Image (cartoon, rainbow, N blue to C red):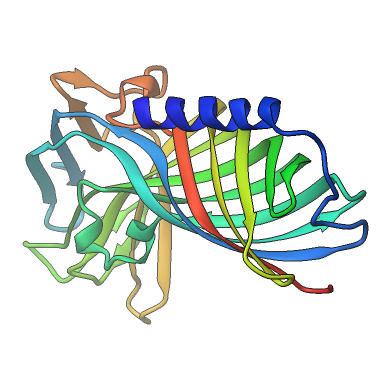
Length: 277
């Protein structure tokens, strides 16, 4: 956090120290942005206990139980990639859209266990101020939709060939027991941009992601007998599931006790390519 604060102060000092000069952008210009970054996930150092019970004493099939217990290591940030397109409404004002997946999203099902993943869909607006011929600073804001996830466990039936979830028979030994955690977000941000050539600029962006409107549910995904993938939505209050974090049972009313969230500082580094000079 200290390095991000220093970054913001240096950028502001540079803006005050230099006079305005000719912009290196122009109205009607399109940009392709490719960045890598660190987005907040705030995964806590905590214990996880989870169980799913398939069937009861009245079931017409052999019941099964999937259960796990493990500890999570603290992790403040997740590594992301970002691909976006920008358009300059004026030579100083740029609108943009981008998609920003967490790298954990590309892991195999079992490898996601205990990890936060997801994707951000961003809509941004930035104002550019020139502080040297090849150096710009930008101030802006981004509105985001975050489709987040967390891998609880993976497994399959032990007493029969399938596991029953919401009445669906899943013939799969690698059923994914995951959390789907969605939020809206708003983030003020600051960027530094250096022109390498008429076509390429390198940039650094930093800001603070503020989430709101959080919703969360569990999802158990596995293959049906015909090998089609079936997603099964589950609530935390469903009688056949139990998720406990640090001895606190998660319910539909206390999702803020989940061991992660997407609010906090972020930092991105990358390049922009001018698509029309």
